[in-house]
Length: 587
Image (tube, rainbow, N blue to C red):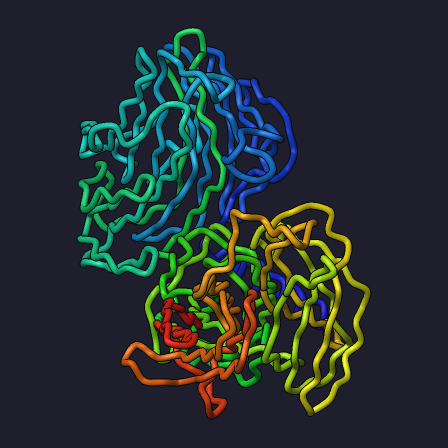
């Protein structure tokens, strides 16, 4: 009795797997050549449902499992069918899978010469779907057993004419939907049931009338086409490919990534929703959401609310380390959370989730939106270990460059390095100092470093690199100065001129360096106004002698609050003179 129980369980398991659909068939990874006129049901990998069969007619040609095959056609092996010449057919079929009045079939194909690169001048290939002995015998197709029929005829000059079966005749399917030497994806949605039915593709709904079919080629729909002469409302359980009429057996058909189903593939009707991030850090978001009713879902992130949804039949790999400024799949699975790292501080990120059913080639996506899907989330602003109030480089009477900076507070700081370049690009700067230890004081501290290694005249740029105890790095600057080896004869082409010489970077976030020069002893005041003309910050620089100076503005108002993104006007008052430049704060 116990033995019989296990037998029943085993049979139920087998039946359940046979009835499961859709079925994906990709020819495995093996290789081989078949040229026998005796049919074989073992040359190809076993079909997941139904029986597979190949047979060569009496007019040459072959079936070839090739690995590696053509680039871009699929992974592992692919099947290359060489057409027979006149008077015979070479057939590959899968027949006897669970029957239905509606079905879906998909495959990738390339037609051409043996290499897949050149074209052929003669031959005809067919894809045929229906039911009856024509799918399991050695003969050509029988019209009364066909519901779907596609025909590709090779011609001179690399032409390829595509037709579909309507009743007992072949009709053109558009102008030239397929070409030789190009990989094409063909999909068939067929309805031989009594009433209209609905299917979904890439998240959109389509209605299909009774005794009609939609044929998609490379994403282009040919809709509500008439069908072959199979009896209305009968069931379909077989399909086949075969080639014939190729003088010299020059016509080839490459096949891979076959999907077939005795119903339209399932589509998740409920989308994921309520995307949030319970834990937000400077460079990471701990995302969570409420799952929809798909078996799995993909999570995409972008810096703008513009997403290209994944296509049906694709199953992208997720990488939770964000590495670009554009769209990226950061998760693919069945869970409801993921931690995304590699983000920029104080930055808005859009997150969108797409539910899907199936896997690999059989995936079907819900591409609609839902509550808080998509959702915008912002990383934390970087907490700098240093509040800097002054940073300048001034040439001394001893032909050295004195670099000064004043900090109002420091916390968790390891120290500073000075970097120098001959242009305002930080990437070109080199480190010129030892580590200057920080004081980690809550009081103002004045620092100085002397650069006495310059050997040529020119304008030099300096940056202050602050390193915290955890290895974090922040940069301030640049500040610049004109240097002359002969201190008594400064370079005549670069005199000191009153005014704001530069604001860099601009746009900026969170800090920018405002560099200015004065040509005579003066009191200096730097004011910053918003776009409405309201004063938001003042820097009272006090009495200054002729030289170049710089201050750091960290994007905050007088009361310490963060200023909003936008345009700001920097005003420099020097005695009775006034100078203005524009700065853009971009968060």
